[in-house]
Image (cartoon, rainbow, N blue to C red):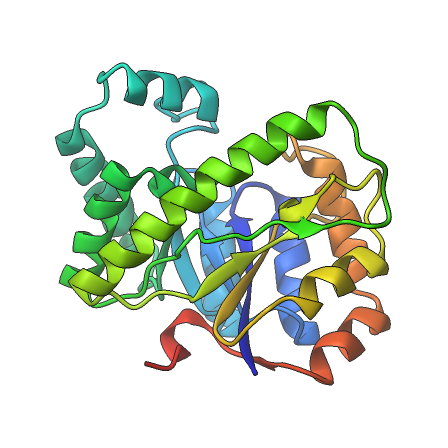
Length: 268
């Protein structure tokens, strides 16, 4: 069975770059996505070229010094208020794509930080851009995986609501991508698919996720070596994820069942 294991946030910090480089060397990720405006983007691009890492564009509007919005909530609020123009999204996508080319990398695929392209009106912009440039696009079709190892918390209700809305959007986008003949992954999974959310990630949690994947699923991860100087709200989870993925147990889990591919190798 073919799956993509993609590491997001390449270039966000030295710690993320180190983690992605090490995991690619170990053969437990098959691609990464670059944030071209982040402080360590140039270093990430050099690592990618040196190690021949397949790298996509991780379009970003919500984090970092040059971000246009103060996080995903701000972006979504302004989108719902009709204050975000499609023309701006198109121009910014073209700019970030060109900046990646200027760094010496041709994107293997497109995706976005915090899945902002999962909103159908934004997805259509990305789908048309992907068709124009003949590159695949991440489909954020992430089904919830029941986590039998952790207890339910009240805050998990909010997470479940967001997951449900996201899944509906993903289904609409699947139809849109097929209509436009844009190549995508068939589904998406990550540690954020687990519900309830784990108190602390273990190999049992990763095994739950891997048991549910189908052919051409993308397993999305956000590994970092340490919590220092990585400006995301999920850094502690990312460190746990990196530690688990560098363990031989994870390598055995994927080696016995999966063939790792990148977006350019998706069948069909």
